Length: 422
Image: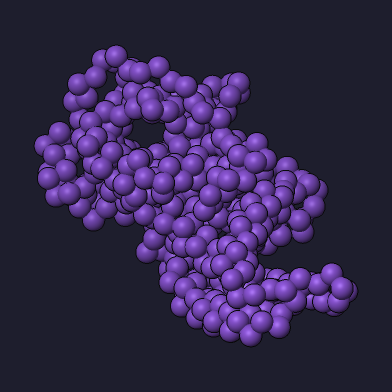
């Protein structure tokens, strides 16, 4: 027999107000309460938009305007569920709005019983622990006892435990207490749907701590390592061009070779940045978003380590920029190719521009996930664009630092018309 889930926490309006006064950002959908404090800086609409709705019912906001939230966004919200509001003032049935709409979005036309089973994890032959809870130290008395009793049935990895506050261990297709890399290949046809249902938790790929460390990096590693190289190459190539003896196509013909004076340096540098933006788009679209065959364990595993891990845990801050070790291999390959195709100073200048493009790309990517750009700014638009790519349109919107190539190749996300709320 499947064990009954633990009872939901219950909070009085006074307790909710107490937490709001302490700076927490709690919202509700009918009687269901959600603590979005940890999601403020990640929200694509900005921190202030959520702050302005603290303590309010956001049921109508999920349907827009300005846009209708996707199935993944609604599923994501459930990870921040903390309990029920006592004495819910809404009419009967309104308290189930968020849950009902999540069921509708999650499973489409499946029977209601199976839909509920998918959401809660109560499917025949599978363990469950019910709705995801965020048990906090501030919950008192019997709530602490219930949380403790529930946690006794779970044995989380002590290394990863500090960040795992909102995870239902038994609700997924993989064992989150073990490295994921060698598990995902067994998901087969279920992999593509699973990997595009994001969770708010870190990912462990390898059992070895050393190998695992090589797959992670902090954001400031990128400028610290690659900016000095970019500046050195720029200075060195400019000095070589300034000598006036660099000619393009000289290795093929002397009659039609083209002199490359130092005045071409800015143009070559910008060309390198443009080249990187195109490469960024092509890699993201055709390599990172390839759909591996369901019967190919190795291609699924390859996809997951390249990009699938990021879509599964889009706010794992240790995996938002390219780690230096694998980045070095790709950067070295691009440098060698450019040196084979172009004169050293010309290829080096294009490469330096491309390297700056890569640095800006990685920094932009990190900021789009964790920054709070001003409303109406370019980065505000790009943040909304990128988060929609994660949560709603995974097969569109491949540009990270610019939408240029999405315009050019017609992969922009569709604008969502929505009537203004009266």
